[in-house]
Image: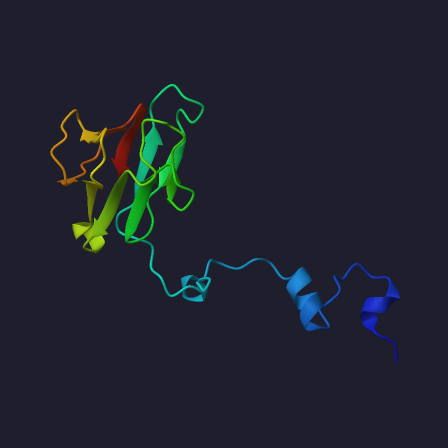
Length: 147
């Protein structure tokens, strides 16, 4: 006995395998219970921050995200943010990230440098950075941005 679908009539072929069923079935409604599982244990941070190069040098407009418990700024190769400015010490300043969640604070410290670290023109450090603060180290100007 032959399959009626093989006799040339216009009846659409019924799926015979799971692959056929997947190929020929209509897409169904979205299923929120079947969301993609994220592999990492870390939740996205509540607060993110960047330094943006504002001076007219070759890095003008470049953004550097602040990640980790502390970020060293200076000329040395082991600094997280390396700055090519002869008026900056090898290890010039450090930004410490304190707290967690929405209470996260970014505090900048000068590391006893001759030329100092300035936030909005003031050399009184350490200071908690606020969104839009201008930081000057040597001839390099950076803007702190937080979201």
